[in-house]
Image 1 (tube, one colour):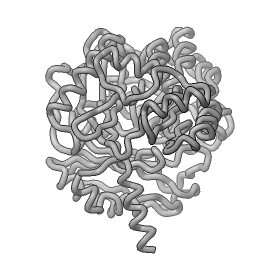
Image 2: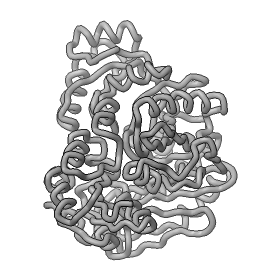
Image 3: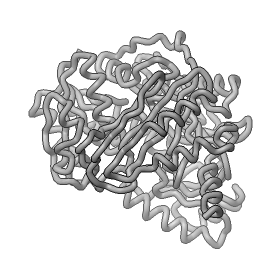
Length: 443
């Protein structure tokens, strides 16, 4: 077992990693920008190192600073968390070259899966269906027009190296194509330093479903069920649940079979997700996230597995404590992301509790929420025997949650899960837009 690990991240995910490391007997080193000096992860870690000013480009994204912080504090491994450098193959390679362990797959695997064009062809090789689209990158208006006519409008332009809605444009007619191709490519270049884009047929209202995977790099691959991430605003997830109301047992088996084969053949190590778009009885490979996901707690609730623990063991010792053949999923779990709508100081925090309720956050009374980073400040997760009871438990927990001093989206989340469409379980990625129209019509 390693003795000391550096967490190359901040906020809630850093706190989450520290908690598991403490149970494993691993000392932790936190890093922080000057804006995060009072952050909870800094207070909970065994050591903390300041790595720069507030902008992430001058702190959390400075690879040399992170690696030197690890070396100078005697760390044996670096956990990248989520976002920032968690899927950066160059960073993973630098970590390895310094003789440290990267808590994630090999950089060569990250590179392979990080390019969506290459990942599509890889998925096809392992028998996973992909959304109809271009076989490679599209670099000219003529090529884009030819592809779009072949696929049929609407189409979607996507960044090969990105996600989160960056470098993504929906095009509904030929006269919109050229301009949107240029915009998508510029966005991709600005956000991922890679302007490569490709084109797929656009599915109007699919479900967004992802499988949670843990693998040890030695051929053992555990599937911890699927999560439904269809409630999104501008391609940013708001609510996740497991299992998905739209995935039947036969589809679940087919998804798991292809994903297991793919991750085994790639000698994948650590936590990861394979994402699909689901339309009726059909599902299509979308991408792989070669890291732990924000929404991993819902999979932990239904499987009883500490995903961060298994991720660390897989990457540092090449083993897991779970038998892939004996994974048992039970009940229903829902997660609501709590986002800050304004920065500021938290003047009061009332955290919900009770059976089947979990609150992952870096907040505490008196902490400062800076304006420089992602708006998510907490995750409220519940677990219950059935979906109906999980929804009721989430409503109760949201009503108990009180965060004063900053504005959050708590009331918005109550409106979403209280809506008849959500309760029916019959919805896709356009659901949020539908209820927003209702709110606007109501004034």
